[in-house]
Image (cartoon, rainbow over all chains, first blue to last red; front, side):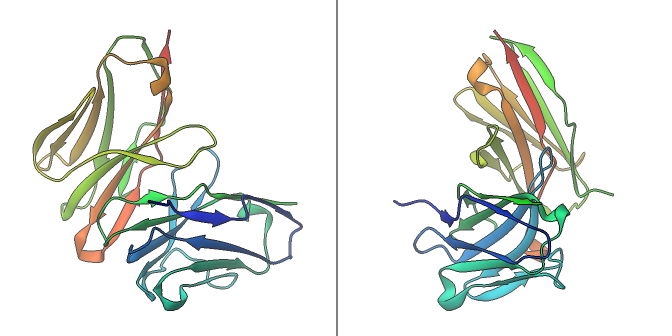
Length: 113
Length: 111
């Protein structure tokens, strides 16, 4: 069974530029999560999808971050414009249903200069 | 008040000893709890989950849940240097369909 795929693995941009991350969850997993993990901290949930609907986006900075999950499968997370404090690892995870074990992708390491 | 709290550590134990990692949570409505291990530069991976009061054992790992006291712990027996990692506790709040992670405890197993 293929795991959660993410791309790119690394991205370096300058502040005020835009960036997009892509995630392909495990086949059949209805729930998809995007987390931001700053060095030395635990993952912070940005947004949670159930199929293609948003369940929780209470911690998503909506003035600069956006996310979508078309057709309930792949998802993209966008930052526009980026700030220095957005430098972090962005983790995508999926689970069969909400509340079940989450399987994480390798993450995208973002550095904003 | 943080919803899930962990001591950031580092917790240092000698090889072969028992490592005890603790986590407290604020919402009594929390239904299930997960322990993830995260090696430096890697993604979290599940060690085990628990949803009933008491102990759950899996190999060298034992998860303990006490809902009355609102804490969950992870015991690692016969600790190995390969167990050195950050251990993340996560709580699932069914009412909000939300999983919240703690900040993690860094474990160092000294050979």
